[in-house]
Image 1 (cartoon, each protein chain N blue to C red):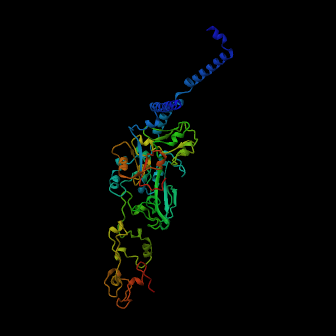
Image 2: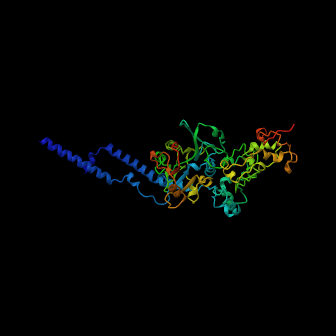
Image 3: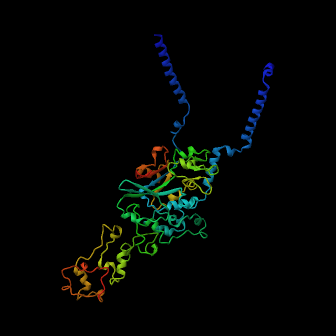
Length: 252
Length: 249
């Protein structure tokens, strides 16, 4: 045994001492100096999950609003907007739910808001209610005709202009301005839902215009209307071949 | 004679040793075999009904509100793409932004064959390439299947951003770490819906536990024809698309 150590080269012995010292130092650094969270990836991940879970919630969720705003909730749940969460339009409301007096959610009233969903866009699915914001009752706030909590297509005839804006604007500066659309057109309720398959009626005969513009009419509405003799005035034609009913020409 | 005998002996020895190697390999537990284990507990998934999307971008807005995503349009955790396919087969894809002008003039464009919106977000892959490439283990998958980023250890090397085949990640301009959709992990761990699902006005977006027997999510998977994005990459996305057009990648 002693012979083995005698033969053992001195430089090698020193090298072994140095290397083992380095290994010991490394082990000390790894096991003692470096804190566990730096080494343990599972621990880092569970910390990250904890941090992620602790992030603040901004949107309160659709169930919360009902507690205080039951009336609006009941109105909304039967209308076309029944599947919308309140926060879709009113924005994040967790802060409001926790402290109702200090923070108020937004009430979007701008005419640019509703068209974010309802402006006509050919990429939108067919059947989704869409309007052209440029032609649809320009400058009027949406809520003046539609209740956002229970939106419905408005009733005729007041808002024929919603779709037939061009005609409405022309009529507005014509002699027929006082006439409701329904004086000449019958618009079935179904026309508002499926405008292309159910169409409003149009006058078919000369006699229809004659009810007001005939020489011996008794119609009260037509007291100041220009009168013609139906028998003599353009008897071969129907009236709208010469006169445009939405903008009848001014008499000279 | 002798040559043939020794040849046969050697031949059979080789055959036997091959069998032995295979036997030894079978004893070693392999990752591929381990994957077949049935999932228990929560395993979150997400559904998108493409033909319900109206492209209103409420989801993008809600995501930015909820998760402090920078307001600039190119930092997004979820986004909506508008596809326009022309009659000549050419397809244009453009991400929309909240407050975009609708383009009604496209209605009169006779060269357009079809057009639709596709919402996109992190697919929370069951086999996520972003996790594989992260050099520091900063991005990982939780037990309920959500891929998260540990922003304390992320070094901002952008490797995961490159690796994601869906372009779902971005580098956060303030923290300079990778950021991505977390399925609103802080919300879902409290039993709430992700913010985008919460505000979606047409129920295009559906969220739930894939292991739940009865939920809007399992109903969505049962009632629709389902496709995922880039299934050939074997990332096993957990965002499922109903009625997806073949043009969508």
